[in-house]
Amino acid sequence: MDVRVGHSPDPDDAFMYWALTTDLVDTRGFRFEQVLADIQTLNQWARAARLEVTAISLAAYPFVQQDYALLPHGASIGSGYGPIVVTREPMSLEELGRVEIVVPGTMTTSFLTLRLALGDVAYRELPFEEIPAEVASGSADAGLLIHEGQLTFSELGLRKVVDLGEWWLLETGLPLPLGVNLARRDVERLSDLSDVLREAIECGLQHREEALEYALRFGRGIDAAVADRFVAMYVNDLTKDYGAEGRAAVAELLRRGEQIGAFPGAGPVRLDWI
Image (tube, rainbow, N blue to C red; front, side, top):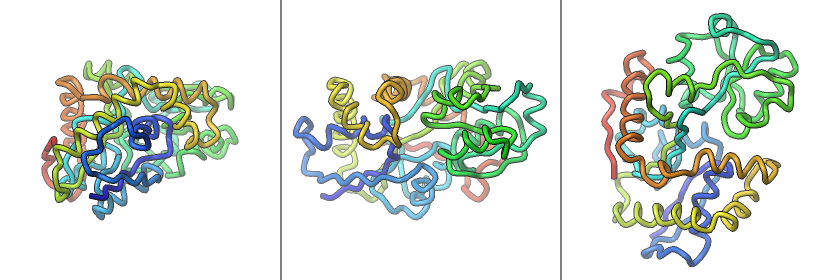
C-alpha cells in the first residue's frame, strides 16, 4: 500500500523518517513517499485531506479532525522552550502588545500561543524564513520565530522578548506541543501504519549520527551544529510517545484555543488518537 508522508524540510522531521529510507524497519507492506512542504502548506493540504500521513500545526487540528486522527508519536514538543518573539531593541510584554508582529501563519501553533499570551495583537503574515531579516532591517517591529530561527536570531543582532514555550510552562506546568502527526481515517491498517512510523522514530534515535547526516540534506543551509541542537530539542521521549503529560498538554492548548474562539467553524474539538 502506498502512503504519502508529508513533513517539513526541517532537520527534526527529516530525522524522524530517515529509517524509512533504509531496511532497518519492517514496513509491513507499506511503501512510503516523503512529501516535503512548509508547515503552513501542510496545514492547508490537510484541510483538503490530500495526504495519508502528515505533520501539521496542532492549532490546525480542529479544522481537519473529521478526516484525520492523531498519531501517538511524531510530535514536536518543547518543555520550557518554543517559538520566540524578537525585536531589535528591548521591549516589555506590554509594549509588544502594542506593535505589529510578523508571524509565520495564522494556522500555526506559534500564533495561537502568541494570542494566548498577549491577547489580540496586530500582525502580518510572512514566510517563516523571511521573518528574522524583516525585523533586523527595521521593516517590522517584532517577529515570531519558529524552526531554526529560535537558535540563530542573535546572529542578526535581535533580542528575545519572550519564549512562548517558557511562558506556557510557567502558565500551565506543561510542555508546549507545536507540531503533530496525523493519519487519514480512511487508510487501511492504521494500527500497523502507526507501529511502522513509531519504529522509524526509535530507529533514528538509535542511529542518531546517520539520521542526522540524512536530515542535513533537507536543511536550508543549516549548519550541522544548529541542526544537532534543533533535533535534540524536538526529537525526544515525548516524540516517541506523548504519554499522559503530552496528551494533557494537547488537550489544554486546544481547550484554551476554543475559549478564545481560535477555531471558527471547526466545531467542538474531538481528540481521537490512533
